Image (tube, rainbow, N blue to C red):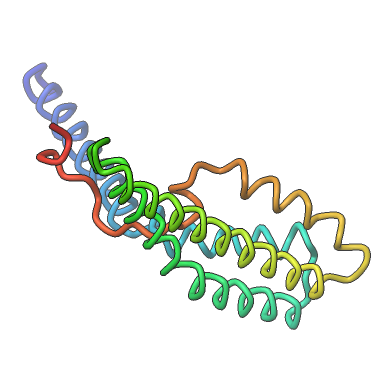
Length: 163
């Protein structure tokens, strides 16, 4: 075999390997392995493992989580909108800013109360030996950045808004 044929063979094999590698990379990117739903399933699986929930407890937890999400999402959107308006108002509009600040405090209070009710529901789902994990879950959720707590995003900022 001549050197040219050997080089062509090596280039061909490397090209095929690159195509296979690209196919693997793009298939994992587009498969949704990092999608919101996949992350949610992974978190639910972790909760089941940490708390050692049986099927009934896990279903009760998921039901509570769904109710909590449904109740809290509109408040998070209102809080975000009021916060944006508050910071965008000029200082001369102090009366309007004061009213918005009252709304922001009320939305925050309602969110805290909903969170507290949700954590109480989780405590009621748990057996006594599982209760020790609830405080760890609460601390973990509080330490997460707001974006990862599934806060509702009304409209992401546009580059034209950032001038």
